[in-house]
Length: 117
Image 1 (cartoon, rainbow, N blue to C red):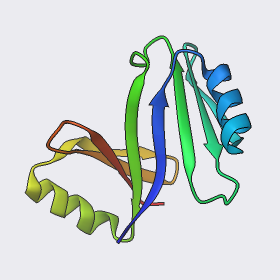
Image 2: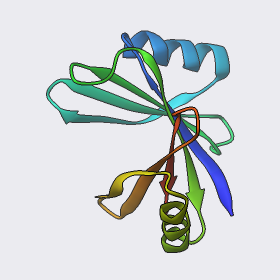
Image 3: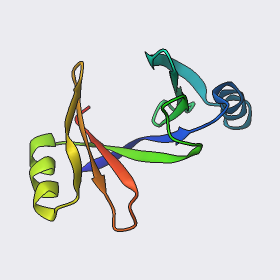
Image 4: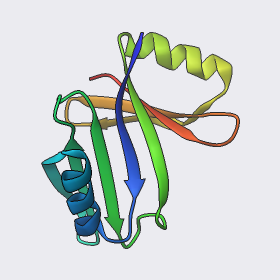
């Protein structure tokens, strides 16, 4: 079973985007990261705390565009094996702290991140 987790948007003005989503949709920032000196990342959460929007900005990030959608799975290893057999895995497993993830690509080239949260 899979559950939607977050959507990532690559943006040119991360502060303006944050303000927009807070004002227009009631999201609030729950986390900010600086993966390196050139990139900023923010996670905004909806009022129900059931969905996150990730904003990504900075040198080295892609041009403003759609980033990816992420889903959480119940059985990470089984999901990874299934997706490998389908031939849709892009790259390999990424491990950050206690979080494991990987990306699959749909027929149009859109990326979906699979998480073990």
